[in-house]
Every structure is written in structure tokens, then in C-alpha cells.
Length: 319
Image 1 (spheres, rainbow, N blue to C red):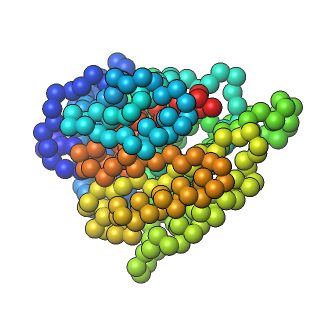
Image 2 (cartoon, rainbow, N blue to C red; image 1 turned 180 degrees about the vertical axis):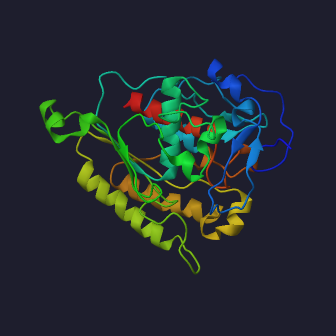
């Protein structure tokens, strides 16, 4: 049975959405594979394409400032038709800012999926643009499968390195070398830090009764350390935290359930603002609704990651 990844349902007619002709091949059953040790045990699923009922609202004026975009993201919501509605319209960009700049990114698999989608936008290819080389088993929504082969040869918009299931994903544009920044008069850098799922932690709880206490402590320390070591006077520092899981994943990973994720993000926001950064709350985008589509109850598919990618690209341009 073809279904939305997360629950069986019948979807309404497709909405006008920010897609290109390259996505048309995706509007059939999509193969999405969970990680072998997935938090929610699901068989291989053939799912309706997550973008088939997705659109960004465009009625409001464009978000003209960083603050307006960050605030609109924090208060965004999905309407009954699957549109992500914001108080101002998320600006649409299909390229990186001209001239280049130092972009320094740190995060985990949430950031990997966001940057993978940025590459899809830049290539204008939603079928296989998330990879350096197309993978026949990881197409369309399947690009976000957490099965190990679908985490290889990921396409990033900047040079990235990753270890331990992306618990230390690090990306730096070529403008980030000290020599280049000094030669160009200390141009402002864009620094992004995301954590909460398993940034600086293992991919899954090791044993016993897992808790968010250690991840909270280490991530708050990481925010302060990053601000001290990598953020200079004119740099723009952005921090993002946890998403919401589906109810099924909450039962398996209760330490990441909604109330605790909200508290994690609240503390991360507080420390981010203390060091002069801005907290970008993506929990409104990845809101825990099973209809949104996930590979494993935790990792979202194209539609949610496209919202995040659009916001990330807009922040790059607005700064």
C-alpha cells in the first residue's frame, strides 16, 4: 500500500509548490529506508512523495531582515492543506550569495539533511541532487533514508567532513582560512551551530535510561566555546537545536519527547542570546506530525528539509 511515511492516509490534490520539472519523476511511490537500528522499527516503505502536498505561503510581504525571518520561523505553522505559513514570506534564492564569504557550519544529521537539500536547490534537482553521484536506491524522498548507503557521497554546498554518524559534521567554505580573512580585511563570517540529536554524542543512547541532561550540558558549552573561538566582532552567529519526533518515536526515545525538546531549545536559545547570537527554531518546521513524513520517526523527508534549506539560504543572503 502506498502511504505517507509515518502513517497511512489519503492525501488531497497536489498544491502549487516551489518545485521544478526535475521533481515530476518523484510523484509516485518513493522508497524510504530507515536506519538498521532505527528508533522506530519500520519495514522498507514506499511512500507518497512528501512534496506532493507541500507549499510555502506567499501572501505576506517578504521577510526583509534577519530578525523578521528568525521570528517568522519560530512562529510558523502548517495549515490544513499542508502549507507552511509564516508571518512574512520566506525569500526564495536558488544560488549562494555572490562573491563568497566565510561560512562555518557545525552540526549533526539534521544539518546534513538541511545542507543536502541546499545542494538540491542549487542544482535544481530534487530527484538525485542530494548526492555527488546518483544512487538508484536513494532517490526523491529516499535521499533522506537513514540506511547507511544513503549517507554516502552526500552533496554539500561547502567542503564538509563528518565522523561518528555526523555527531561532528563540520563544513567550512574556502574563505574561512585565516589568511583569506586577514587579506580581505576581516570580512564578516557566517557561523552556524546545530545540536541536540547527537551532536558531540553517540548516534543512539548506549544503554540504561538515556537522558538529555548530558547533551544539554555539552551543547550549552559548545555554544559558548564556538562563540569564543570562532565568532569575531562582525560575524553572524546562528544556533539551532532539536526537532520534534513523531509520537511513535517519543515512545522509544522518551528523553527526546516534545516537552524535553522544548526545554532543550529554550536553554539553547537563552545561552545563544547571552553570547550575541540568534537561535533559529526549526521545531515548527519538523513538528512531529506523522503526516509530514519521516524515514524513522526522527529524520524528516524532502518537504521539511526544503523549508529549512530555504530559510538557511535566505539567512546567508540577508547577512
